[in-house]
Image (cartoon, rainbow, N blue to C red; front, side, top):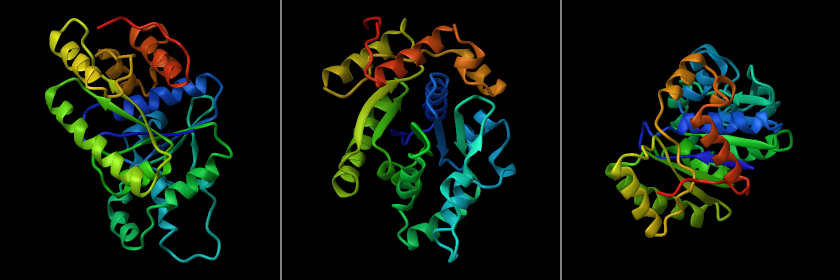
Length: 263
């Protein structure tokens, strides 16, 4: 399964959701890969503990060889790095993605990521793709490469308005490039259950028929501690309430029944 986590709005928790769901999948015994397409490299630093600028053999290097002539291109798995966590691997980001984008666009290489991830799917049970907060070449490549899309939503009116645009963009891309892409759901992130506005916004979106997932992720300082420690929650604080919510979300996405509190 190839999942992309996407929202054009920044600060909604894309990297946190990507890495924590991937870490749970790996902890459950799934051989799991995170592909970091955001030049900022937050997922890379979170899981490998070092900035993307310090790494070689990155996703940028993989894509670079598609625009440079070579008799022998390297295999996609040669750009995969092991993390300190069992079964969890990363194809790291690079600042070079910013400089490479125009070359890739000019040579119409938007399907190359899908080709690479299909090959990697022979060695991995699950692939999660983290994206930048923009509908750029890399995000479109990820949406074309993925089978499922998750959209984080941080429970304010600006994010609500952005959702309609995002869903429209995804629909256009489905029609033109990837009819098999399914919007798996919208994740209410940094949710404050005691505040009336988040509950009201989520309920209204449910009533509009948007695919709001029933598991909501709370706002918690524990996530910041997880970033600082470079440890996903399932390893840092397995019994914490936010960790349990992530586990429930993972189970929900895999078709299991979970108990959730009503709004």
